[in-house]
Amino acid sequence: MDSLEACRDAIDAIDTELLALINERMAVVERVGEIKNKSGAPIYRPEREKAILQRLETLNAEQHGLLNAGAIEAIFLEIFAVARNLELPERIVYLGPEGTFTHQAAESRFGAMSEYLPMSTIAGVFKALESGRAKFGVVPIESRQDGAVGETLDLLATSPMKIVAELYMPIHMTFSTKAAHLDGIKRIYSKDKGFGQCRNFLNEHGLLNVQQIPVESTAKAAILASEDPEAAAICSHIAAKLYGVPMMFENIEDVHDNTTRFIILSDFKNAPSGQDKTSILAKLKKTTRAGVLVHFLHDFDKAKINLSKIESRPAKSQEGFGYWFFIDFYGHIDDKNVQKILKKHTDEVTWLGSYVEGEQ
Image (cartoon, rainbow, N blue to C red; front, side, top):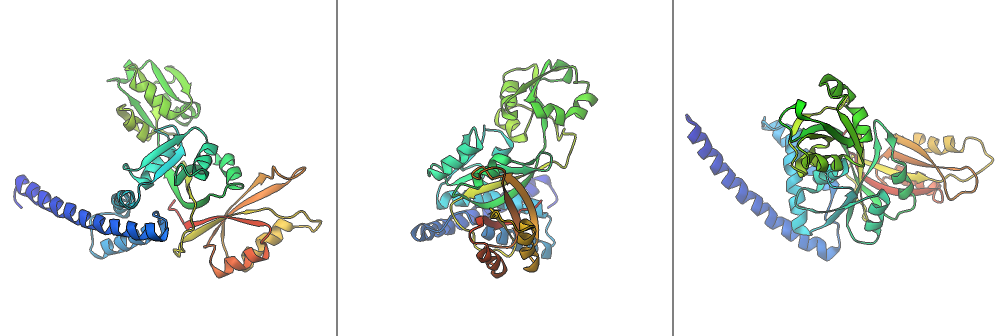
């Protein structure tokens, strides 16, 4: 190919083949959906999607392909999302409003074609799932900067919903505005924490003395900036895109490794993938014996099960002061060594879900 026109013709021909192959794949997907609907099997299978991605990444390496793992994941996660909607359209409920980081996390897994229902509270997400108004729910459970989300942990303790997937998402802020130049900006909108998280950027660009107006969410900030040519918003990428506010600067946060862990909730059990995590709630019985928690955790050590997290929360249903323990460990609920521990502590442990370990 010696000319730009020849390259474009080659790309057009390849795109035609890609479209035919994708449609061929979707025809098989429709058949999969019919089979799943008859058997009642869940449409979203994170362990199956993980296996497909790993196979493709290995194949790409063997072929010395130009795509990296992130590019392969981005392309095929959207294909998976489109495929799930062909199998069975599902509604996804998330902690809103539109344009929040939780919305961005939900869309990264369920794609642009899915139907999304924002809720104003985490409790509202759980209620929508429990009432059958949505099949999947997405909520934050912890962040590197602020720690655990207590409301999510408390609701997991009492809800029949299970964790079916987790994802870690870097939290990047944008400076978005319809103004042509920085000196034309008279107001900056953001959530109160947004100003503190981007203080270095504001200082470096001489914006500390510009009026800072805190609002309830970064999504609201983007809405206000979209209506005001003399305003800017410190907001998420998805909010700027959703409300049509041009991004003047990206990744403006002071701490660039801030990550939030989100969980996807539903009403089914994942099959083992070989790369699983399990979450449980331990309500250890009160006893005069010293070191109850130590003895409980020692059972995991003896079974060679690695813990990834332990978080205590006040046990609101107990009289006086008491604590429940939320524990994440590596393995699946059906693993023999896990079953041995859970049978020993049947009355003290509630299973919250087993799911493919997310990539941090």
